[in-house]
Image 1 (cartoon, one colour):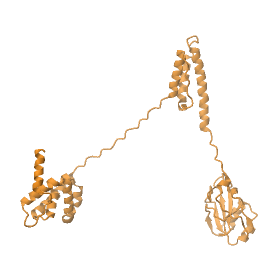
Image 2 (cartoon, one colour; image 1 turned 60 degrees about the vertical axis):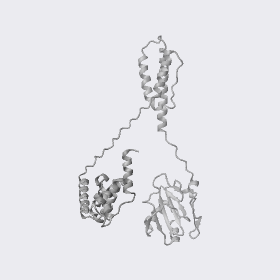
Image 3 (cartoon, helix red, strand yellow; image 1 turned 90 degrees about the vertical axis):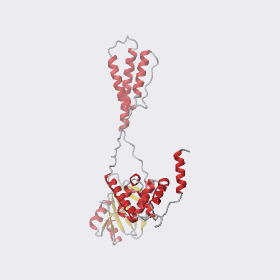
Image 4 (spheres, helix red, strand yellow; image 1 turned 180 degrees about the horizontal axis):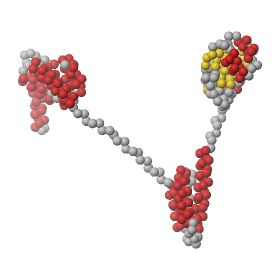
Length: 342
């Protein structure tokens, strides 16, 4: 054990482990010094800040926010003195000293210069250039021809994004060897290879462009499956009208729906020439502004008037002739509905 550790152990033994308390009969300077030594040994400046905040909340509340901003090193032993006063040490001069210390701490907090914030510099992301495998294969193929070795093949399947660069390199080399006499070693084979390669590049390029512009096949629609969740009434016995098949909705551009229980007549107008679709029990692709619903007061009279009309004329009759209040058509095709016309 070092000399310093021995001294600390001795001090702890002398001061004891219990926090000192005071009364009016034992409040002198020696007691104060012993108490400060106790806190110096057993507590930290963080504890001192806690003690200062507790004392200020009761005795000096306006300093609470200042102390909260202060660092433990700025408060130092002031909090220990506050704790000593709380534990019964009576001395008005000591209380005034604490108040003066609080003012000192306030000045430190107000004049403290905060360290400037250092903004993180975002480094640009450098993308590595993707190696042109086609050009490498082209170089190997030319070397093979010139050296009389077996000619390497170029892979056109996986590296089509570099076709343009390969085409430029092949045509440039073709220009360079064009005037070279064929009797030189392997020149004739090189010219033939370049002609074949350039023609193949042109064919593959056309194929790639055609694939890019090819239209996607339209999604097949199964009307029976799409309308399977609709629950339609087979007929309205009072009016003597029957419903059309639910599948007739798909692709239609007008739809007349009668609901016997609610006595409502609805005209749906498709939003475009592709016509209606159905999702679950809801109608899709209809024009919300043009599609309307009206309540019919005398269904029998209504049916006599419109039963022989086309869907278009039924739309005009409901919009212009029927005088009941108009409401926007809802997408849900309610259970028990009857499809009158499409």
